[in-house]
Image (tube, rainbow, N blue to C red; front, side, top):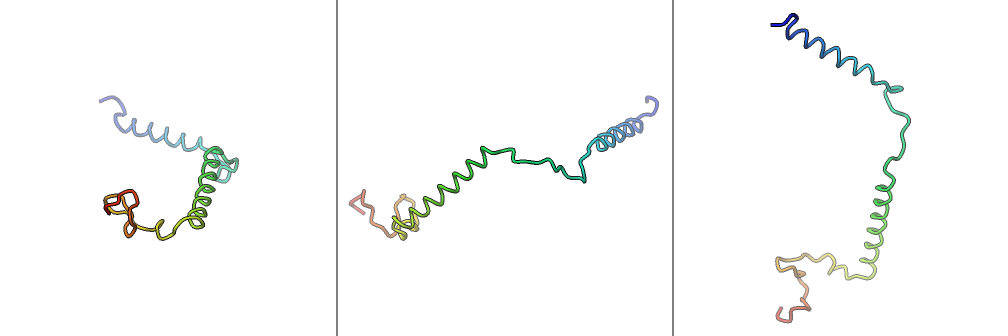
Amino acid sequence: MPEGGEDAHKDKYAADKEAAMNDFSAPDGMNRDRGCTDIPCALVFIAFLGSMIYLTWMGYSKGEMPKLLAPINGDFTLCGWKNMTDPEK
């Protein structure tokens, strides 16, 4: 076994790890130089929220609420509503 063996390797690893931790320096433990780094994502999210608000308003004001809230069965037809595309039902 080489001189120092496994203990020397562990000591060197521990020293490297401690040195890496000491290299990390942030004022008061928090990075205060922060800002918005993902403006395109924020714009897409705001557009999504706006479209959801508009579509919800349109559904309530121009739609038939019972039809909008009706469940769909396995044949993809609205439960409790006559299917206008299939005259047999």
